[in-house]
Image 1 (cartoon, rainbow, N blue to C red):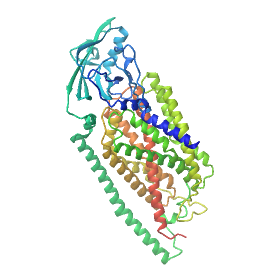
Image 2 (cartoon, rainbow, N blue to C red):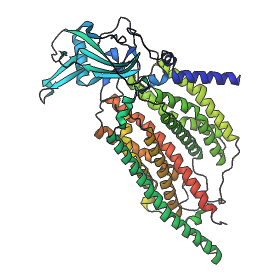
Image 3 (cartoon, rainbow, N blue to C red):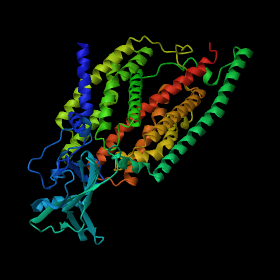
Length: 594
């Protein structure tokens, strides 16, 4: 029975991961004979500066074919907002056409207004021809004066497709619009406008092999001037790491060495001498934190997100996320998150039991909801906004059912299994010193040793190591740039982890030296504070570096970035706490405490 369930789960995940239609398309091998039909799908239209605000292609009154066929899509494609339908153009292999009519259409006053509004908002269209992406603008605005009432709006009615082929395969496709062949949509008072939609197809042979036809999309992010900026980012980050490492090596280790010598001398010279500094609180430093169920759940969720990030990087480095592999990233995120939920359950419950927690079932429920809960609430709000706008970002009911089934049949069972394994691990918390029965009082501390100033200090350094690379990531996720230099991004990620761990360790030492023994939550909050800085960068990017506008795009940008930054907070908080725990265990293991 268990084997059957496992097989069913694997089959479902494979179908979700690859999609039945993608398997069929790969079987065709993308080889065509002269005159054979090559699949052309119209995907979506939308304002160029609002990448999340996209609509179905035929939401605008274009010429539509006799029967509009929808392409079956995998989960990742639907999550990406792709809605592919058969296009009105016929681009048969190596068949040239010149000013071929698509249709003759009489636009009503309402349809003219819709086209004019789309042209005014810089609407573009996206299509896929033999799985190759192509884009074009639907019209242009001539700004003859400063007053918007003087603007003139034109709709392109003639499109030219330029296609390169190598033997029996399509290699490249581009779109040209004829700026002279346009329809004037400026006049509001016209009742009907007659439009002849035309298209031209030109074929040209090329020597580029089929295996390299996607290279042109990835080369844009590998241009020399882009690489120089990326390497500058790496050097900037490395300098930050070296400075921080040098600081720890020369200052912190020297102070620790002096502490060890001092404490050893005190033990030899005067048994009754009063202890000071971090040794003074040895009986409280391993006292379990408040809200230990929440703390263990945060560690479990952070560990799962860290594992998810590592797996995503592995897939990226082996070439799975090549440009315009539609929905591959979203599919990988959903599937890997589901499969790694057992890690969250195991880590959270195991650590909770080490902290002598008793209600492990409640801890497991908290772990399952800590990240998914806010993400689900945000999704419900943003999906409602997308439905109100009739945008392609609104998920169909069937897709929501698939995600719920994955969560019910895969994520939840693995979470429970991980929790049971963690409960039965019988691991004990390794504390090198005994904890006293009553906690010592924490002495009054200056304001800059408070939690918020320490978080600000802890988050700034890791953020400064990654902020240059952040622009390119944002421009890719929330724009139309292509990001393919995953090796550099992986190096930056490693640097981020190192800086986060080092700065958390340093601040933990200074906290203990000030005889403040409540370091558990502080180390987690300081480690995760980089996520808050990234969200602050979102504000800067939105208002200073992008042209996004409108309620829907604003909601999607700040809503989903809040979830991503929250994920970073949990992940880096876990890294910071683990580093601080190793450090605290090491220094207290190195001294003798009564």
